[in-house]
Image 1 (tube, rainbow, N blue to C red):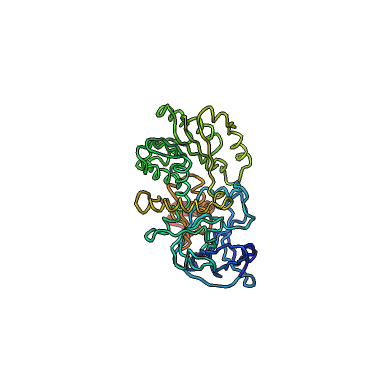
Image 2: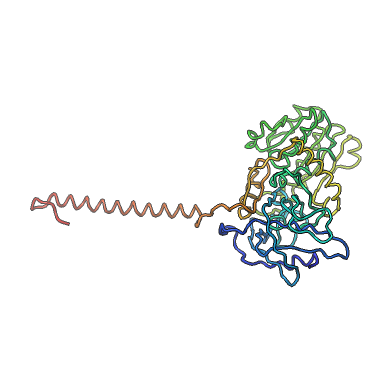
Length: 447
C-alpha cells in the first residue's frame, strides 16, 4: 500500500524515448481505473503494471513529450499486475492550454496529461462500494488520463450504458457535461430562445448543437472557421457565421432584438462583442479562454492582452440593462469545489438523452498515444470536426527515418550529380566520334 501523495514519488521512468522514434511494438492495451475511496484514516490500494504505456509532458510551452514505460517502486506500493481490453482517452482544448503553460496551477513537470477516459475497472480500493471489477466506465481525472493504466478516485468514475462504445463514452463525458450545464443550468434554454456560441465545429460545439435541438424552436447561431462550414451545413445550425468576420453586424441584421444566450469559450475582445449582442434578460456565459493559445509556445502577452480587452461590467450596469453574466469551469467545480454529486446528476441526464438517441457524439479521428503531438497540432490549428480521441491500442503512424525536406534535398542533389555525369559522358563520346570520323586514315578512332 502507499499513501496518495507517495504515488508520484514512486513512479520511476524506464525506457524513456523520444516520441517520434518509438517502435511500433506495443504492450497489450491495459486500463486500470483504481477506483479508490479517499476516506480519512484509510489508506487506499494502488494498482499498477510494469509495462503500461504513458505520455509525459516534460516541459510546458511547446510540443515536448516523452513516451515512457512507467514502473512503480515496490517498496512503496503493493504489486498487482492487471490486463484488460480497451481504453479511449479524450483530447480537449484544455490540454493545449496545459501544454503551453497558460492554465492555472499546472502540475510540476514531468506530468501526465489528460482529463477524460473510458474503459473497464480492473481493480478497486478496499472501501469502494459502488464499483466492481469489470464495470464499464468513463472517468474524469485531474490529469494523468493519457496512459494505458489510469488511477482515479472512485467518486470521479461513472458507469456507462451497457451498449455504449468506449470511444463514444470518452467523447461524451466531458464535452456533453459542459454543454448541458451551459445551456440548461446556466443559460436556462427554453423553447423559442436563441443561442450563440463559438467553435461550433469542435467537440463541445457539436454537443451544444445537439442539445439545443432537444428544445423546440431554438435558433442556433454557430461561429466556426470557414473551412468547416461545408461539414457543418447539415448539422442543424440555424445561422452559420465565419470565425474572424464581423459576425456581430451579421447577427444584428438577422436578430435586431438580440440573442438570449451567448456562450463564450474564447475570452478577450469576444467578451465585449458577446455581451453587446444580449437582449434584455439575456445571459452571457464565459467558459474558456482559447484566445490565449496562439503559437507553439505560451505567450504571456497574448494572455495579458486577452484580459485587457475585457471591459469591466459593474453590477449596476447589469441592473440597469437587465442582463446576466456567469462563468463556468468544470475542473474547478469537480476538483476544487467538490461538486461531484451535482456533476454525476448531469451525466445521468446526458446518458439518458443518448439512450433515447437524441444525441450522438461526433468523432473527428482516433490517434495512437505516440501520435499525440500531431493530434494536438490538428486541434491547435482548428482543423478538427468533432472530438479527437486517443487510442492506446492503436499502432502509431510510421515515421520517416529522415525528415522529408532533407531527404528531398538529398535526392535532388543526387539527381543533379547523375545528370551532370551523363552530360559529361555524352559530351566526351560525342567529341570522340567527331575526331574518329575525320581521321586521316579514314576510319573510326579506336577507344
